[in-house]
Structure formats: C-alpha cells, structure tokens
Image 1 (cartoon, rainbow, N blue to C red):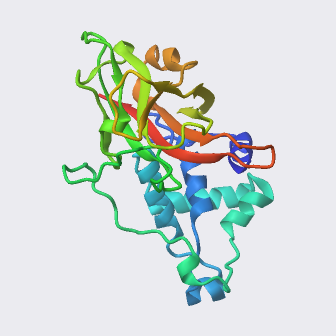
Image 2 (cartoon, one colour):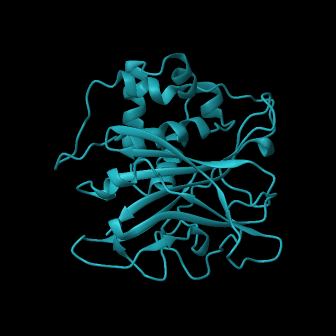
Length: 287
C-alpha cells in the first residue's frame, strides 16, 4: 500500500548523467522494503533524540542485497527526506519513517542486521541449499539476486532450461545451464526446483517485473516432474518464468533493464489462513 501510494504521488523522476533514473521503481520498492524491515536499537541517541544513525546504511545494504545495485547511505537519506517532505504514502509511510521503539522487547527478540557486506563474487566454498523451496530451509525476508547471463542476438545457441537449484544463492549468483550464456530469445523460460516439501501443499509462483517506471504482475503454477532423477524423499517442480511478459522482455532494447522478483507462495488451507512465502529471489539479466 505504501509503495503504491508513493508511486502515485511521484510527479518527477530525478536522473543521473546519461538519463538513468536515480530511483526507478524496483529500487524504490527495495528502499521501502528495507525501511519496513529496519528495527531501531535502544541506544541513547535513538531513545532520547528519535534518531536512527544506522538506518540509511541498513537500507543501502538491503538495496544492494536485493537488487545488486548500489545506492549510498547518503542517497538513501536524501530520498527518505524527500518522502517525508512530500508525505507520499500517508500515515503508514510516516510511521515507517518514525518508528516507535518497543523498549520492553528484549534485544535478543528483535531482528538485527549485519553490516558486513557480502562478497561481490560467489566462491566455490559458498554453501548451496539442496532444496530451494524446502520447508526445512530458513529463507531471509528479502530475496537474493540471481543473474541470467545472455549474449547479443547475433549469436546462436540451443534452447535450454534455467535451473536455479544448481547454483549458489549468493549476492552475485548466476542462473546458468550446461549450454552457457546464449541469446535471450533462445532461452526456454522454465525454472526447476528440487524440494522435499509435502506434495500436498498447494503453491504457486508469483512474479513482479520492474522496468524503469513500470511494474507488471504475473503468476504461474508449479508442476511436478516425474521423469527426472531426484534424491530420495524429494521431488522436482517446474514453473514458467513470467509467461505473460517473457516476450516483452525478449523484444526489449535492453533486457538488463528488467528486474524480476519471484516468490513461491503457499496457498492458505482455509479462508482464515494467510498466504506464506516459502521461496523468494530476484532475477536480473546481464551480458
């Protein structure tokens, strides 16, 4: 709701040299998500002055983690001040900008954020989750970024599926196949996941596609693959990647301008239950 209200009230788009927008929609969404995730500490500065000295850096690191793009703490602070002044987002945004610290909550029960920056490149020793959508795997509330390497359209390459479960889910992971980088139009937009979660669980893939100042929504169903070898007690599931908008991305002048946020959500068992996100990641294209 806050994101939609902020976007609705935007009257201009500040740009850098070359015409690139400073805060395109996918970065604005990451900024607001980081703002909502931030938990103030009980330091004297926070309690007495209502200041949050680590917040801008927290959000800056969150943006880097979830989008792979850099926005400095100073840029974050400037944007937050703009939001405060314009009041876009109403009371909900103002509540996020000036959170009330619950001093009665033990520090151990609050969510804390490590300011240690992840490496810019994945390493061979990085841990690889064997079941990306397994119930046993504890996912962070914000997605990692997976890069899909592509080549210009003047090259030819066989069609292949994308298998995120075969790669490291790290800051600079690459969605790859045995065929290597290839033209985007030669990629079959099919994702495969190996998981041990209960087959009786009803789940589906939800996608949010960000492109400069536009946002698109899409979804696809999960299908069990019975003809693929998998570890005992596990199953392989597939789903189409942004089926309604894949051609839009393929035919665009620059696919690297798109960011795809992917969530696999568990459908509620009853009308009273809420949906649960059991997997979350983001995809970006790069040459």
